[in-house]
View (cartoon, rainbow, N blue to C red):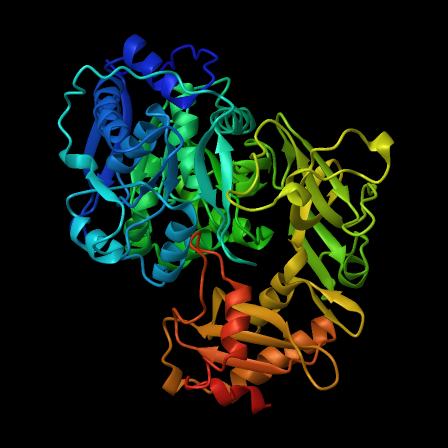
Length: 585
């Protein structure tokens, strides 16, 4: 039996104890389903583990890991997306080890990051699968850590008995995406991840009604790990997984899974919603019903109101309610979840004066004003505190003032692995009356309007020209709207040194539907320059159009402005066909 009514959830301090509870009380309920797509037009092959079966696999693998490593040792997860990944993660935690969620070496463009993270984490054991073992062995070399194949460990745990982990101990290292600096491993305790799972469930309605978690986000990513693993384990919910590549090859696969289950909550970055709008055909929409979707989380910078509008306009005929879109804010240092708009509430949008915003004030503007910035509200926190502070004076700012977002709560990580981090995780307000210390400095800029958090950008990404602040994502939004040849959400704006002060460069991929040799590159560049000049008062120092896949992204799919800037300064784009486009127009 797999009743639609969720069982009562106890207050367990760690994820392994939740697994043991569900295996004992609801052994035949479905726990995890991985939907494989072995062929191009496959409708999906489902592989499901019940809680009893999942617990058996976790115990067997935990016993094997306990033979290979001691308490506190790191276990790197280099498994492909699937139930083996989930099993390996819970097995490491059950054995008292520290999991390091990563990915196989064949993830395009991320081999250097993987090598850097492995060198930093220094794992004793690496867990992968039989399918990926050859590439993993080749990548690690002959003197690398020992390898355990998750899918080849028999169920017999040889009498091994797990010991409940200490809730205060480190459960795993969540490495940051590296969008503005080298990736750092955040120490997430057992208590942190359970607290954050409960907070997310509360925000998206999972504490009062049954939900089905459907996800294609990679499990090494903080949102994928919490929403597809920690939250369902905490509440005893079904988690349905698919591979990120399967979504990218055919986005309707994700929508079909959303339609196939009741009370679905799922998450995707902003680009994924526009991608569905652009690629899902009228024929694929036939028979698709999305009226059972509860919440669609948009939790990746930037969250644009226009994207939500386009997505819901495209799928309103399939019964998708506009109130399902939930702009959210989070970061690895806070496990992931911080703030979210609640499902059922209409999207809150703000039109703000661009010049005032650059000066640190959020002042209303007419939505149709060409100099207005349109931003989505990211709701309110659940079970934690959020404040806005002046990043220099550490003064607490009032509603409508833009500053650095600070967070405090049981979900905030212990600090960065193997490096000093008191200045990030132990901040204090200048005014003692603002409360005790121990605040997380997020490095993100934002403000509070009408009681909602509004995220405006990254402190380290801020472009300052002639004493005026410009948000790169704002410049990028203008550039990508200037000409249809510019690929959406695949461009980076950043500052570079120049003879007369800092200049601004835009490196943009062209749309996949166009060939660079056939494009009128000077015309595209003129359009971008003109739009940015008119809307921002900026004269771009350079505009470069490059082929799809050229602008580097982080492991979580965000454009890496820092790496794009570094490559630009190193002359990496000099060989591209559009490299001289900056001189045009």
